[in-house]
Length: 160
Image 1 (spheres, rainbow, N blue to C red):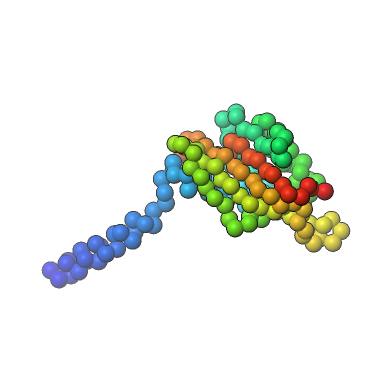
Image 2: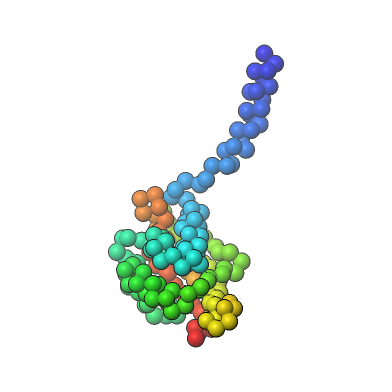
């Protein structure tokens, strides 16, 4: 009997701790951060296919850079990313102090990311910062998966 009471008491103490281990539900804006993390990991690995998997298939994708629409659909953005990686292998985005997730209604989130873009010098192989600024990513929930529907970068230093 003591053992049963002891096990029951241990369960009562452990249950609240176990409840905190579960991830947030799929529709939680915090889960949008997982998609953003995947975007950066794939970018830094030069994996265009991986980046494309974070973009929306909904037909309303757009990417804006310094006030101009660079890509008005997913296919154009993927093709552009492929060309950019060929031109600047080893490009790497580094976040400055992480990123902030802002819920937008139901099934939407805005992610604000202070960042730098670094590239490797073709001659020396040394990495150098070529621009810094802010990236914002708008995400929406699509079939229990968060996807980027819009991206925007504003930079303090123009890319050379």
